[in-house]
Length: 316
Image (cartoon, rainbow, N blue to C red; front, side, top):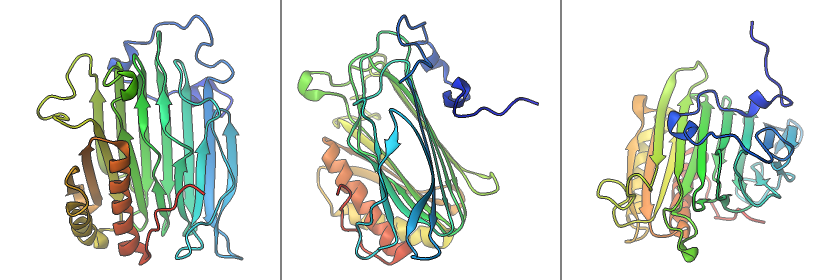
């Protein structure tokens, strides 16, 4: 039997199957190679609703810099039990050879919203690449929003992210990604090597709910081509996994909310296989436009599932 890896093992931070498109950049690092101090970022969070005060609180927490979180905050008057947490990185961005992993678990009817302190910056890479694993397990009756700020891939950067979402059939999860073209003000629009994003979800029994893969290699294929991004610069995806009884209503509310949002937003919302949720794909010119559109999806989900509004407050 193969030994189970722990937070002290390099293998714990390495994705199971790194795609060949990313592995092609896997030349050896001369300095601060994979596994050296500061190259492995780890975060473990377990959130549960407290039996005494009814608030969602952190019951388990482990951080390995450059990843950590602050204390839980309670920002919503309409949802006083919902915990807001912020993923913080003092490094300022992801470097070549970095391997990050986050494990987030919700139990006992927890309600939570997690975001990042700011944009995720993927720095220039001369050798190797960077990876990030996001494992989320949302238990029975829980409600979870994972809405990070945008990803900014710098010139010559290489990034692979895999998100493994395990969401109970009775639970709800919103998972969002926004990808910008780069540091546009520096003339680095679509100047990165590769950004490979894989998101997959199952239910509590391991039954597949969806798999979605986006491979962006702008130096090999123009992102501005018809059928890719066309005239737009920024792309976003939001996945809403919810109990099947809410899916049709969610789909209608998301479509109607976004239809009147902005003439500059191009979007499509579709029901996921087996009526397990809704996927929303968005195109626009700025990250702020797409972020506000994601907030419209959050509002639709909170109104439908929690019968509560969303104030838009995320950064205290």
